[in-house]
Image 1 (cartoon, rainbow, N blue to C red):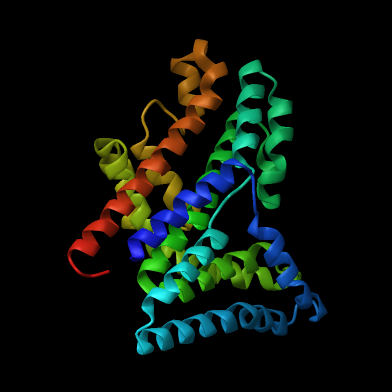
Image 2 (image 1 turned 90 degrees about the vertical axis):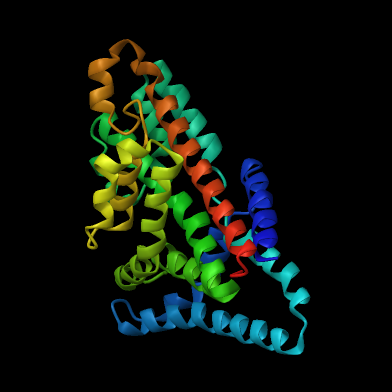
Length: 295
């Protein structure tokens, strides 16, 4: 049933994202509002944030264990479905990327920038000084966002149940929305720890779902370097698994200069297709685990 619950939640969440419905960020910001009472720069902010996320996770784990003990496992499945639908999702990206691609096709890079700048990390907005850099930052942000909103939750749901999935999503939310900015680097470090293994599993999946030969020659190095961060792992692996210079705008412009206006759309389509195929691979692996009696 774990596979069925996740599959139904994933399909439901994709439909909600297409309709731009229910962004969990607003919920997390409200939940963290009490954190603004902590003094800036103090460790109290970190512990308070972890407590806000950790306590519900512990309660979920205890409730899940108790219902298992009573033999009421079936009762948890509808609750897990609702929880996964609420935890997953990246609404708003479809319209943003469509507007970006349309502006790129017109050659209006300034308009393309205005469409996506609010979706980019604040620390990287100033680095988008050229169309090439802007597109690579957008591509990296898109991959990391989809990874954190779907693959990370899927991994921890399968590995540790709904409590682990909630905690992982909560840490990502703390990193992005905790009121005390001084505490966010600590949450970011914890998020990297939680993402370390699933990011490398996804990078391996890119080789299966994409160009295996290209991934072997370029992307496999991310499995050796254990110090790489999540965004570096995903970008390096995707660059090797994608064909047509989807993540190399400079090289594409040199070889296919007459098709440059279509590059933005083609590159983003290739990234989204790779991520969709990778999720299909993960679902197939879950099915094999079910058959083997692991799940």
